[in-house]
Image (cartoon, rainbow, N blue to C red; front, side, top):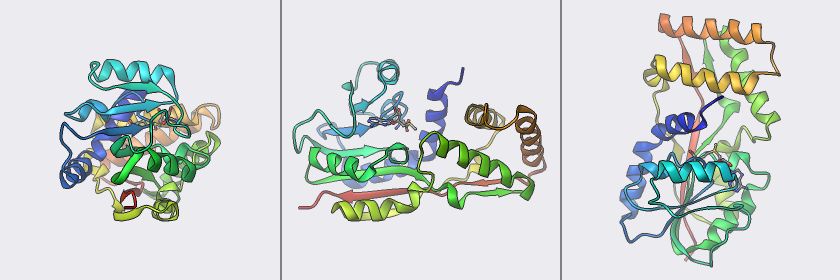
Length: 245
Ligand SMILES: C[S@@+](CC[C@H](N)C(=O)[O-])C[C@H]1O[C@@H](n2cnc3c(N)ncnc32)[C@H](O)[C@@H]1O
C-alpha cells in the first residue's frame, strides 16, 4: 500500500525554500491567521513553526494530519468549495498541489478570497504543467505520456500550472509574484527518492499499462540515472497574490 504521506513530504521539500521566502516577505508570525486548503496528510502543516489551520475533504487524511501535526493545528474535514469559515477569517490562505484536482478551480479561488481578509494573501505554492514535461533520454518520453494520461484519467488538469496566473487574475486577485519553483530534481533523485517516485508511478499506472511494460520502463529509468543521463523536469508553477483592497 502506497504511503501518500511519504510522497507529500517529498513534494513539500520541493517548495520549502519558496515557502520560507514568501512567508518571510509577508511577515508571517505566530499571530497570523493562516489556512491550508486541501492539506492532505499534513506534510506542509507539520513543517510550519506556528499552528496553521488545515482543511481536507478526505476524513482519513485529516485524521492522519492530526498525528503528523501533533495536535498543534486546528484541522477539519470539509469541501474547499464551501469553506466553513466566516468572511475575512484569515490573513493568509494557501494551497499546495490542490487546484489541479478541482473541477472548478476558479470557484475554489473565489471561496479562498472570501475567507481571506481584504489585503490578505492567497498563494498557490505548487501546480504542475505536465504538458511541458521533459524526459531524457528519449526512450523515457513514453513514461511522461503514460503518467500524464493516468493523472488525467484520475481527473487531474495536468496543465493547471500553466493557467495559474490567468486563474488568479480572472478571479480579481492582485498578483504579487508568479514563477516556477526552482528544483533540481536531478540532484534530489537519490536512490530513496527514486524508489518513492516509482511507488507513485506504479500506483498511477497499474491497471492501465501492462506490468511488463512498466517494469521495462523502470529498468530504463534506473539505468539512465546510474549513467548520469536522466533528465526529469515537470515545470511546477507558483502564484502569490493579494486579496483586493
Ligand atoms: C495532492 S494532495 C496535496 C496535499 C497537501 N496539500 C500536500 O501538498 O501535501 C491534494 C489534496 O486535496 C484534497 N482535495 C481534493 N479536492 C478537495 C476539495 N474539494 N476540498 C478539500 N480538499 C480537497 C485531497 O483530498 C488531497 O488530500
